[in-house]
Image (cartoon, rainbow, N blue to C red):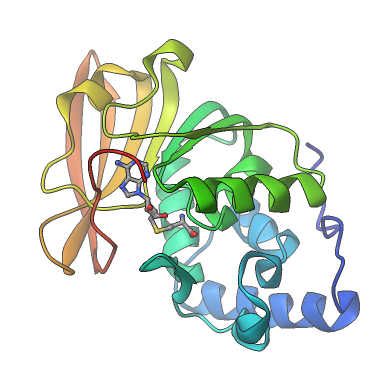
Length: 225
Ligand code: SAH
């Protein structure tokens, strides 16, 4: 995909939402996001298309919002930070796996900085909605799957980036096995509703762990719904 700040197919209040996005991006910059590719991606993806009608006016606030089924669309700052961590040391990724599609917003952001995104969602209704949204926006480099992503998607790996947007107690070993050399895995880890954002970089076959900020994510749950 080209490196521009041109918005994706913007169906709703184009000019107003573009200005709201610019303000949001300025706020992200002030909070320390400094990867221009990531900031461009956040400037391009219309977040209001990923929330229900009643929440559209709040889509450019830097907060998580409900998306139904007791799930949430992540806070833009956390989306930007996780994307920035995933890109550590690299300009662009070839193959990325996301576990927890949810609204599809993070997926759409990843699709701006990766050649190919694979994303798994355990709740069928959310997977379907995300599919329609991405299609409407003309985002074509994403493959979605309805199912339990706990053990990744080995048939499509290895991945040079893996991102979990739901929190396991501990990241399963099977996911590290699907991470390519120099690949980065980003995940919130911990129990209940308070976790630490961690990232691992694989070097010589060993994934080295690094700590980032405290975060609040929904738990990674087994099985599909
Ligand atoms: N990135 C998403 C975050 C959604 S919340 C967004 O910004 O909208 C996390 C999502 O992970 C939820 O939709 C939840 O259903 C999903 N999830 C939880 N456990 C999962 C699992 N084992 N496999 C796939 N998806 C899972």
